[in-house]
Length: 37
Image (cartoon, rainbow, N blue to C red; front, side, top):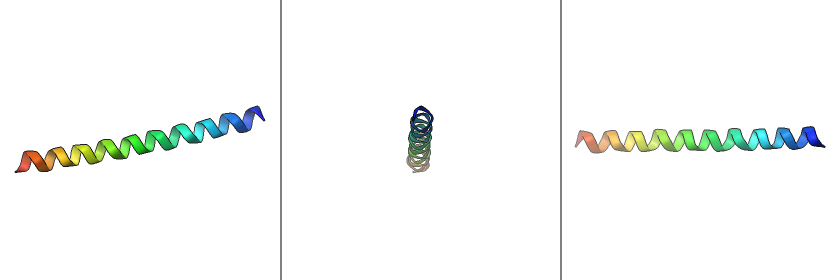
């Protein structure tokens, strides 16, 4: 039970980290487009 909970939290953390990373890349991309205008 405890192990399953730890795995679930780890997967959740990875998902959140991936989402924030993708959003960060998108913001960086948008900033580059703005700078290029």
